Length: 194
Image 1 (spheres, rainbow, N blue to C red):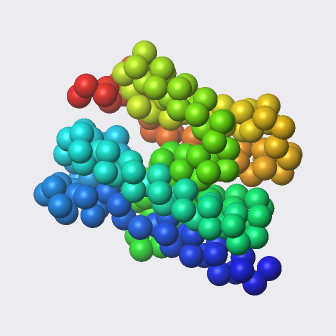
Image 2 (image 1 turned 45 degrees about the vertical axis):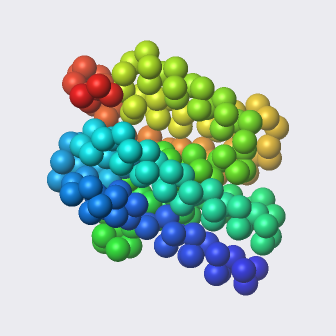
């Protein structure tokens, strides 16, 4: 159990690494002051271009993948899940910014799921691409993935505690998209091409 006390907090800190701010410094942009104001891959793509957006996406995915993998290797699936979720929480509520102003958790949670649930993740990626292409909004694709994540885990036959844990994590992602949901409802959401 002692390894939990080490790896879960470390995973939280890793999740809070400011990927978008680092790329923003390199590109001369501030993701929290431009576009949607969100320090995530979609906004970096919007304000700094494709390469910046892809760089942030890769960094944020790794922030979830690596902690989940280390936790799993150190003490099995429970710690892998805990570390993956801790990394997502760190990304959304970073201690370095007073537990505010983080990203929405999509890429970091996706990174954890890529390690823990590879087949489910592949299916959700297809859902994300199709939804995004049809709606031209990244947020709707992210919301679709979040809603379907616990469903996919349950269908694949993983234990109930994993379904619940990832369902709660997905719930955080959905809550972080509340402003997007309101804009989608009023047909004012930012389009990918904007």
